[in-house]
Image 1 (tube, rainbow, N blue to C red):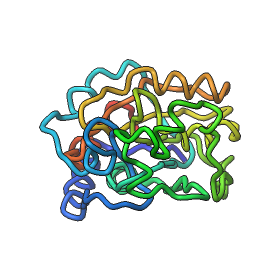
Image 2 (cartoon, helix red, strand yellow):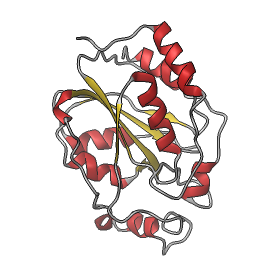
Image 3 (cartoon, helix red, strand yellow):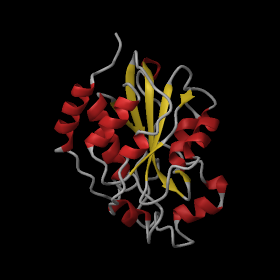
Image 4 (tube, rainbow, N blue to C red):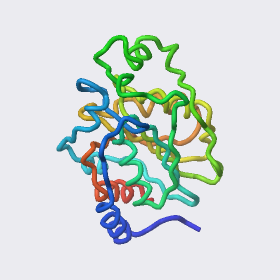
Amino acid sequence: MKNKISRRQFLQAAGASAAALLLASCSGNSASSVSSSSVASSAASSVAASSAAASSEATSTVTTTGKTLVVYFSATGTTQGVAQTIADTVGADLFEVVPSDPYTSDDLTWTNNDSRVSREHNDEGLRAVALESTDVDGWDDYDTVFIGYPIWWGIAAWPMSSFVAVNDFTGKNVVPFCTSLSSGIGQSGELLAELAGTGSWLDGYRFSSSTTANDIAALAESLSL
């Protein structure tokens, strides 16, 4: 059965989920922007830019015939909040990418050259971050997959690369999205698509910590989800 809902249904779902959305930052596994004194403080800050304009620039459309999944890595909470809003709005399942060795607040202090993220940034050999799991139950049943991550030094946070590299996206429509304080999505989605080597990857989208369910509904509508 085609998994497609009307504009009115999207807006109703958006209104219901907006009240429940909490985008508070934390030091656990959630999203961040590496663009202030630390990744954690960057993700905690909100910006006025709206993602609605980005949604209107979509040049591709997706019509789902199967299930939808939101896969996300989050370092401080922002990407987690956006991922949950997407899942609530379009009726998707969630899968969190969790490093085997989670990042601490000190690890995320990008201004410290000795911090974990700085060392990983400076040495690409350290970016192959081990994950607790890369296996998604029922992976073959999903035909649309949202891939969410914070932007680190202009690219997708590398734990997401670890997930993408070992999964087969054949036959799937893939929608990258990032969270950041000010940086755009850049080529992060394209680089992940090259790493995957399979799947139909759409243009990516940037969300801020002020993203609302209405913004998500506008994106979903533009993709014909």
